[in-house]
Length: 456
Figure (spheres, rainbow, N blue to C red):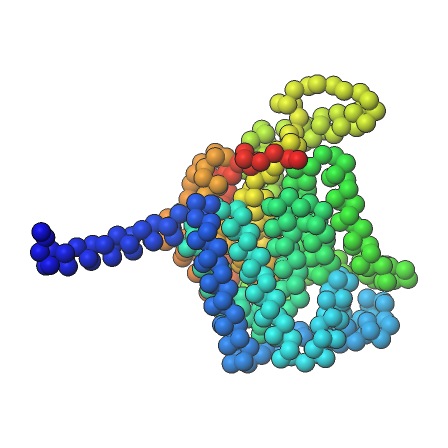
């Protein structure tokens, strides 16, 4: 029989193997460890609930926009419907009407007091994190351990609990829309996306990606129905302001020409102010934005169908045949010349398109304020660590080492915690953005369709 000393010498080996086994599980993509990922997500949410409570009751609130929001709501409740006349301490109202409805509800619930509002924003933060976890688990393409990164931002917690920005509600509805697109609940996804736009128009950065998903995922008449619903929701929400003051509403709620103050820029502080406000810079950034979107669409998101032009051609053919079928005319051209709407879009492809589309807009934004971090912080682990669903979609498969990716994630967080921003911090942020964008573009492409599911 083995001696007691030899049995004791084997115990540390068992412990080492156990640790090694768990490390291996954490390094696997979520699609291989969904149950473990769900358990970790629930545990992290519980920890976040405790942490959020501590932030609300221990960290001083920072007065920025809440009072102005309440002043604008008071004007709205007082009967004012002219956007030019709805103002607060920070200036005129520059958000769509959904913002007013959300913060009117907050005022009625909290009485305009900060502490109860912070508690509600804490609940919103937890709900937002739950949705983000669900998006990541549905996509399944990042390592399990990367879920922790969603909980480690000082600035992101601050934007919710200590600043009470309207961006928090806009992005909550936006991430709900992403999850619904993954679940193929297209009507409700469009509803959520439109509601998000009605709170703040930055969500329009995802609109090109939404169009691509509709084109690839739905027949023509359902595409039209979804877009009609999107516009109808905007009209219904804005209806009280459109009757007599439509020009002021669209001029302020969707002011695309607005130039932000150079002092508050987090990303382009190294650019001289006269260049920052110039039309030439705006045009250059817009060109970079559009060209980058085309490159991603052509070489990544439409790659399996032969690129953007091939998808457009197939969409035209498919749409014509669908119209002809209503007239009783049937033409069989073969599946290779048409878009296949019998297949279901893969959840990781949905996240890839919408998160990537949003991040391209971030990279080429003329100005990022501190609260704009909420637009894309929850997408960074996906952009950095997604494996393209296991490599089924092809592509170069380029990727920075994990240590470099973590460094990029950390430096972005550092840049958003430098206040006020400096030329050095903003230059570092832009370099990190470009590196993340390159890593994402050159990485393995996801397959657009879920091979295990067919459209009903």
